[in-house]
Image (cartoon, rainbow, N blue to C red; front, side, top):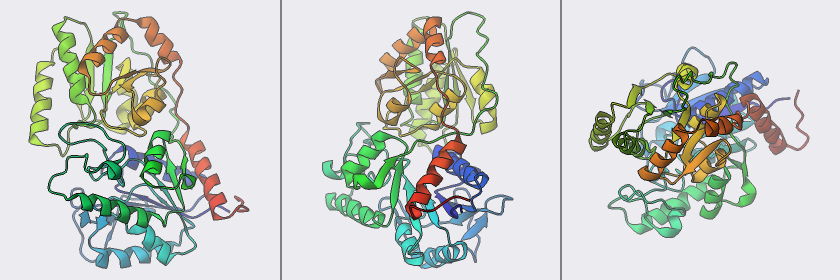
Length: 421
């Protein structure tokens, strides 16, 4: 028989189409197609949905097996749910009614670090699996492991101290935060990591290596990959950026690179896909200024829907992912590879694992506009390089196969003789 699975994510892709939410929801759909009874629960707050008195749950859409859990009281520094009096009884009732064999957690933001212990208390025999999509448990600066002001990256938050630039927080609070989160995570039976780099960071932080395994993400198979761009000039000189604009994704670094290329009279085009939601006024002013200074060669496409990706990919030769933080498994790289586009990316974190330097893409130093400009120039003037790298691109794993890998591990976790129907 197949396990009954409760999928937990910190939002729903209909409300916030981030990489974690999209993968969690795609995997949920694949579980169902594999014959599993599954329920998707995405947490939300008043940024996306207003609270409805009398219930913690709301319908996410017309589907009967996708719901939202309103969790508007959350301590981000401690990853703690501050309204347990209201949250715990309602979620306990959900657990008792659905009675999953597996709870697959993709994030604990909004739910709170207390959730695994609650699951363990209500359903002692249920197995808890948590996919670690970022470093939120390790780093209180939104899991970025980067200093807010200096942009310096670090690897071991609790061993080095406050390296993220949060002000007014005593050192002992960072230590107590780490201890508390690790204690609550003891209730998790198995951790999954989409990259070896992220796995190593959690092992360094204190998770037993025997409890965390690498399992790569996947994407729904693309029936018709985007065709090669019809570049009449003969040069692969159109670059694409996909994703939100924020200080850590490197869009500002990319635009700075374009400034120098424009100053040199270089022929190219950059298409920026994505908006800048929830950013500071200072960042938005900087981005707006850079767009204004590069508008002769940069197209600000703006927000886009997932269904538009094939057409948007068809208009570019290269995808640039210039993040300056330790990205784990960026969705944009998988999307680029689905459509045969080589990727120029920062050679750090999970990005360096996903893109094989010199084979299906190129690595650059993060936060270095000069080097990025040099690499873009080389790429845009070398059709043979594009052909070589594009020819080596491998599509990401099919989400159906990834689901089967998860289910095989789940069955073994429940009991070694757990046999699928």
